[in-house]
Image (cartoon, rainbow, N blue to C red):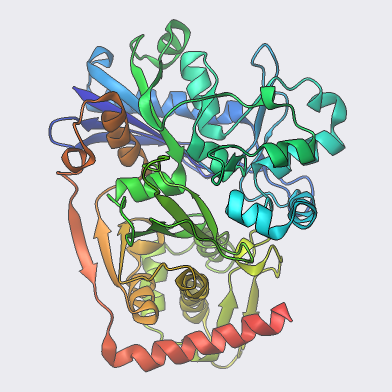
Length: 495
């Protein structure tokens, strides 16, 4: 039997087919081949049409079925990974009412910050583990206040993965993990965040039925099967936000284990067995995929919005697309640690939670016309991204997440030796690189949820470690000096 994994990103939609017995990925496909459009009608806004996710998912599934030559009726189950914190609103006919307000949209921060103050910081942090901030509940409040006629027609709200599951099955459901990432779950009461719902004036009926993360949540219906080329009745048995799912894909399930990604945005994600939170909500705590009322498993998430998108911007507008990313990495590697005094703050993709929702914008500092070249910019960008990780990891240490080993897929920024060596050097952690990604992880999650695998241990028996990067102790002082110079620049901007 085979497993199908779906990953709904903000840059593309990916599908992978995994052979159940071996755990080997047989084929993957993604669409669009260029980055998916994000609409920004005003500064700080970011929207995508959910229908665009579905359109690209159809193309990816058609391609992956053709490439793998897997008969649809032999697919046991489907798992869904999705971009976190997005808001999808549908009416009673399940028609999408407006474009999704996605994860990096910062328009709702003012509502979340007010809720944080009005409800009380201790109440929010002890119950929701976060400020309502700029998360899904606050995005819905923005709609309620600014688009009241549209709001009045909302029947259900969903996360992006819930929307895809609805399109596959015709059923609207969600999970505790999804609700927690929207700040719609109260961990102290183990129930919906009624106090926030009441404060924002939301009717409880807007919230879909709650199902376990690992379970047969629904099945593919006849309409979706015909549209996608799948078989009717395939089990939909797992869904999770992209960062909890990335941790799952790396078999990061237990307290003390840490996963990282560096795609369009960058994340360090550590698993905790205790209910802890950052008092300033600069890093955020959500239910991990294996969290239950009986076994606390929480994911502490540091997000940096501008990581791979900074590298992409440099490729387009500095390199003029003349260099491949590999060539950019090679040029960066020829520049010494610290980029000869050139520093870049990578915060150009919206307000950053790690900076308390301040939008500093990306900045280049110390540029010398007679010293620096495009290669220095390429290295300074990668160092700036890593240093922003380090800045957030220092906050994570304050709530008990200490990085000794960081697991990541060998993809995106982790393909760069400069990036991973700098991360190892400045954090003191070893970096383990694996042959996996979000869609493959979602497929394995589906196998756990459907019962195809008896345990997570069985599901990840075939996970292949490709490489380990250890900190270069001889360069520790150089990395630390470069980081402190970068941190000084950042602190000047935050004053």
